[in-house]
Image (cartoon, rainbow, N blue to C red):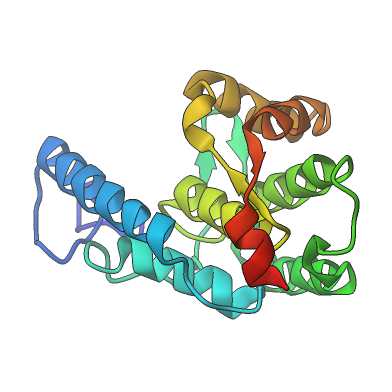
Length: 198
């Protein structure tokens, strides 16, 4: 039994008090699609740290779930993949964002290395899986905003969703090569972002 679900159900506690899974899924999809479209126009301002990452999750899911933007307090898994123990997540995130800060948020690395470093941070965030729901969308938006800071847009829409999911799963066991290749395909130079980054 999850602390994030209504008693005796596997339905996430939500702001609409919806107990029907299909209806909740439709509400979530419609609202998050709108929020992600808004972020295309106006990304969340931040310093690419934990506060920034949590703010992205809260923006996308805050209208739906009371836990939006809050680090999970229980263990979770999907299929055969067990994500980081909940009590290790905060320290793991702090370490990862410190590493990112040391790399100056990737602003000084060459274009050839950008997909590899983005894949690294994407895979690490995925294995930490800090939220009880909505990790994939929050992680993709964080990576997109990180790339924008380097003058590139990540066009997730050109990627096959099943290939991306397979690459994410593979990163947990075999490394990030598949994810890096997909990111290389999705990255495009963004002249406006280049000017903003200066």
